[in-house]
Image (cartoon, rainbow, N blue to C red):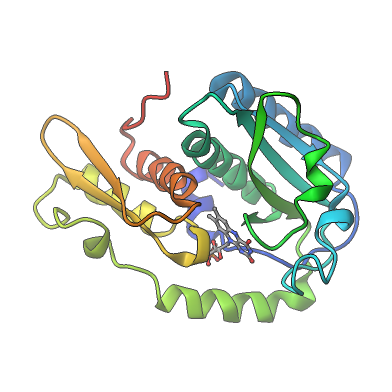
Amino acid sequence: MTLLEASDIRISRRAYIPEPISPDKKVALQTVIDSLCSRSGLRIELAENGEECFGLIKSYGMFSGVKSYFLLAGRTDDPKMHEKAGFYGEELVLEATRLGLGTCWVAGSYDKTSIADALAEGEALACVISVGEIKETENFKEKLLSGIIKTKRKSSREMSADYDTAPEWFKKGVDCAVKAPSARNKQPVFFKYTPEKVITTVNGTFSCNKIDLGIAEYHFELGSGRKITDFA
Ligand SMILES: Cc1cc2nc3c(=O)[nH]c(=O)nc-3n(C[C@H](O)[C@H](O)[C@H](O)COP(=O)(O)O)c2cc1C
């Protein structure tokens, strides 16, 4: 499965088998994490104390069986920390999808105090992503939720006013960005085509906007095959 194919099948998964991820899959995830950390300057870790932060009450009943999650942290003095977390975190999400694992970006429904100790001086938490083997008996609930969300998804034309007149590669980028996860499914990112560059804008002031921006940019680059970000 390619990353593009993974972006087609990915949906947020909130019900997991409460077992550790297999050693083979952990090795594969760690290889991806190492590469992402060296490319991004972020600190990304696979943590396994999920029960502490994703218990029934702490997750408002939204999550079950969470054992593992990715922690994405960055330097407080890095102005692009949240955008980068979205961008590189989504690559990790799609790599996990290729391994058959379920994931869900989580900004709200977990207990942040359990994670505070894992942060170093000068570091801030951008987001966490639950990860694990999908509990298939809960599949129906997840698919139903995802079906409802899909009907509420924006169209490519709603994400870019230039969609009809732009080149084919741009259309493919926006088509892939439509499938990107976003906090509360708000899809706040817009893409503008100009012959010189692709311009992204984010609607509103919601706290997760920069993460949503990075995630949508990752999907755009994946679908279009063109680089539009510059995190240097
Ligand atoms: C930055 C971010 C934060 C999110 N936070 C939560 C959360 O706190 N709780 C939750 O249940 N889902 C959360 N989600 C998942 C979204 O609700 C989900 O991605 C969106 O509804 C689209 O559905 P899909 O991922 O199945 O395509 C978050 C997603 C993103 C990108």
